[in-house]
Image (cartoon, rainbow, N blue to C red):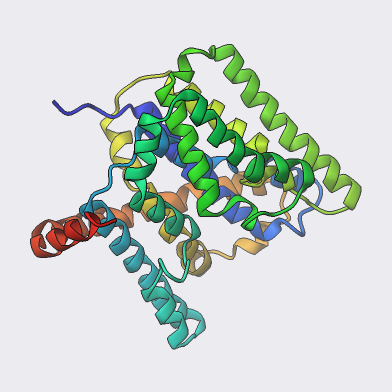
Length: 338
C-alpha cells in the first residue's frame, strides 16, 4: 500500500524554495543596500540561506531511489527550461551560438550548479544509500567528522572558500550522508523540541550577529557566516528539518504544489530577470523602506508563476517519457553498469 507523504516536509520544501527566490531577488542589493534595507539583506540571508541544505537533508533522510524515468525527467526539464530561458535572452538582449550551446548542455556546462550536483548524487545514490544502510555508527561518525572538518568547520573558522563556498558536489554529498545518519540512528527521537528550537534560534542569531558585526567593521555588507559551508547554516538546516519532521499532517494541495519546486529553481532566474522587468521596473523600489515586503511579494508571484508554468510542462514530459519504452529500457541497461 502506498504511503502518503508527510505534508509537513513538503511544506518545508516550499518554504525553502521560497526563501531561495527571496535571496535571489535581493541579490542585486548585496553590495549597495543601506539603512534598514541593509539590515533586511543580513536578515533574509541569515534566515533563508539554509534552503539548499534543507533540500539535500530531506533527500538523504528519505533516500533517493535512482530510476531512468527520474533521471530523464530531471534532465529533460532542465534542458527545456534552459533552452526556453536562453531563447528569451536572445530575444530580449541578443546573444549567439555559445548561449544556445550552453542551454543545450545544462548538465555538462554547469548551467544550474545545484541541478548538476543533485544529478550526480542521484546517479551515485545506490552506493551512498548502501553506505548509509550498512556502515556502523562508529564508521559513519568518522566519515561525517572528516567531511565536516574539511568542508564546514574549517571554512567557518578560517573563512576560506573550498570549492565555491559550499556550492559543490562534495558539500552536498556530506549533507546527503548526514540526512541518512539522522534517519538510520533515529536522531530526532534523541533531541527534544526545546533543544531543536534553541539550536535553530542560536544558529540564526550567530549568523546575523557575526555578519552584522563584520559588515559594520568593513562598512559594507558581508555574509561569510551565511554561506552554504557555514557550520551555523548547517545547524540551522538540521534543526529546522527535524522540527518539521516531528510534525505530521496531510494536504493533497501542498503535496501537489511541492512537486514543482524544482521547476521554480530552474526557471525563476529567467522569469525574474527577463519577464518581470517587462511588467515592472523593480529597481525603482530598491530604496524604499517597504522594499522587504515588496521583495517577499515578488518572490511569491515569481514562485507561483513558475509553478503554474510547470503544471502543463511537467505533465507533458511525463506523458512523453511514459510512452518512450525503448529509451527507458536503454537507460535502465546503462544504469546497470554505473
